[in-house]
View 1 (tube, rainbow, N blue to C red):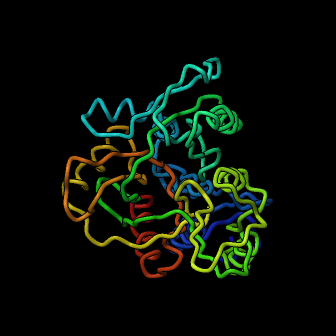
View 2 (view 1 turned 60 degrees about the vertical axis):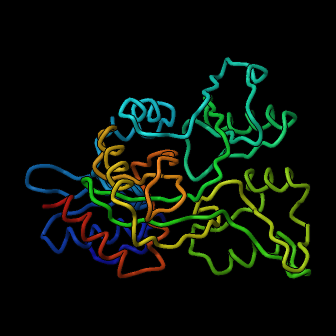
Length: 314
């Protein structure tokens, strides 16, 4: 297998790095030729499978469990771990049965990249928000809006690999540029595959809820939040957090262990990462955390991939 994998349209940098490390160990690799989205690494005792952001470290049952936010919350609470409280709305449940405290969050029980996520401020918006979320999953979660800082902690075998704080995408107006103009400016400089679609339903929902549209021109220094959630694929910003209180690290490690994962990203709400208090909550656990945050720190990206490769091959 040649080392130049760039002709595969969906081959991620992380997968490419893992395949290169496998070859350096003399292991045979194979990549699905039409997309590069999946690959195999033949080892003496087994074959490792890599698919997209899935590095092949987790069992399929544990990964499926973590994809169900409601089930994950149940098992974490059994271990005494605080979670964001969720109300599950099945496909047959009527929206009229809900009586949430506003503002609240409505989102699919299963889903990726913040799809179907919306903030709901009034009872008049709730039916539309549930219908929006059901486009991505029949089961819908209704959660309180949490007014705390949001962090992602990525762990491997109980140890922290890296952590970062993330914030929703906010543009600051100059009195001339429209919302669509800000999106185009971002798309001109972002990595391939990370462009924001001007027809993104989450974007249009957020703008509609705040009385704006793509043609709206924010005034000078006016801040406009474009998505309700802080997803890096939706333009959210992130910065590395170097210090977390050991109590938080023990809690997130216990959470990952509780649902049977080796490698995971834990989304945590808390006030101060360096100082533990009981007013925290885990939002969800991702069995295949992306590497978007690491793209701006090549050395940290290399270090993390070295750790993952060692866990996968050694």
